[in-house]
Length: 94
Image 1 (cartoon, rainbow, N blue to C red):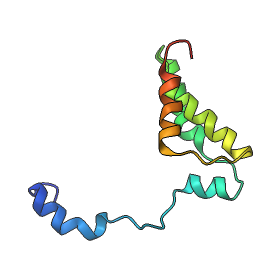
Image 2 (tube, one colour):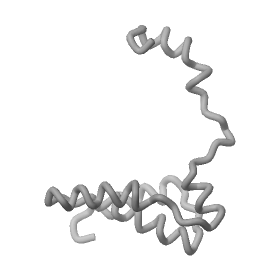
Image 3 (cartoon, rainbow, N blue to C red):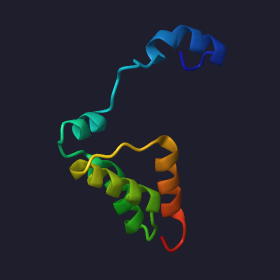
Image 4 (cartoon, one colour):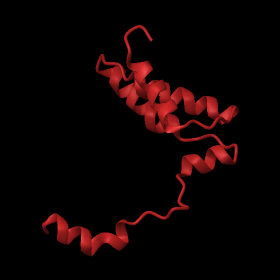
């Protein structure tokens, strides 16, 4: 199916690509239930891999820190607020 033209692929696969409006991620469920998340296995791994290559991953590090904070003190972020926070983390000296 992947070799089909885009329009045909979209038409055939539309039902399977539809996202349930009530679907939530497992991390969202963890935060809602006060459980530890898998953030260190996800973003933390990227930060560790970057460091092993002499690089930084500041947005990933900040996102991991924000999720760890949310594990103990829940906060609702708007998309623009979170985006601004992650962009700020990328600036030199931050």
